[in-house]
Length: 161
Length: 162
Image (cartoon, each protein chain N blue to C red):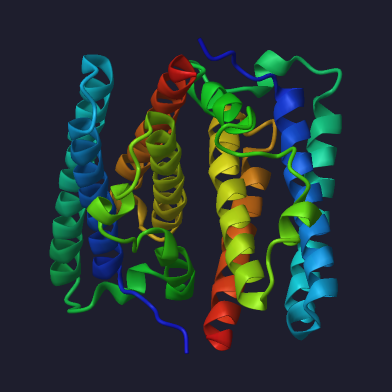
């Protein structure tokens, strides 16, 4: 039986995803100066997302979590748990270490596209799990921005190929 | 140059994702003698088939909608086709038989298929954003929820295998 997530754990993981993203993009920018402008721009956006999730988490503390979660069958929470347990999405992996095996800007862009895909897949579950009051719309905005990152990364990759 | 897609093409990619999923699950089922694993993959194949039919019907409705509106091209339903072009990388994948080549281990196959399910969730979420309410946003939402359920089922099966 998959244990459902609580809201604090969910937002903590979202923060970790964004922290990893910012760290990855900065390290990649240093390693590949030719694409550093794009990567540093994306890092700055991930920092903003981190602040948004941290604020959402802070607003949750001291409130009735039941009011904030809207997931009657707990499926979205179970999905988030599955995504978080490391089998399908390893948030504990150090993004800078993962970068060590990437030797070209193309490799880094492909890895970044995969990481953005993973974060969207997690946030789609997060959006299902939280109520409007808990910031469903904010999660939706972040998903749209992450989709925009995929567009930016894909276009940059096409330019290089 | 950025390649863009119109709404028909986006629905065609969605259908192809589901077709690939169905083929992949049927072929994966053939690899296992264990009835539980075999049955799980066949059930997942059936659900993907139903999704393909849903997308085909939506594409048909879109066609009727644009005919009634007097337009021959439904491009206006996708305000920024660049976004779907960016996400198409998750929809346009190789032959499922190729994907399975060299994979015999159940955990390895499930890990691969979970990646495919994540691709489809992200692609469909993008698709939902660019389809008007009347064109079946809710149906796409239901399919996204079902794909999430597939990941839960696959994860449980992977854990039983460990």
